[in-house]
Image (cartoon, rainbow, N blue to C red):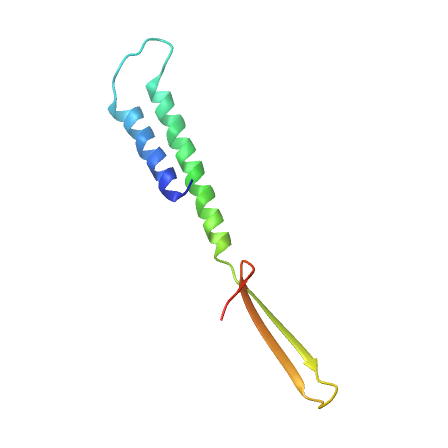
Length: 87
């Protein structure tokens, strides 16, 4: 499920809650079902947004060492994005 699924659930829930006026008896309340779908859509949307933002994080590592043979200082820089090296 993604951001689109959350938006779709919110839209379907709003249509059911506000646009449909059908009496199905005392057992089913379409307005309540619409509200439940809108709440579920909001939760799916927020979870998808958080997961997408976490995926975008990058980690940068810098290591410095001294070469014993030449006495030169060597600096290595590495940037990763979710475990995959970047340029």
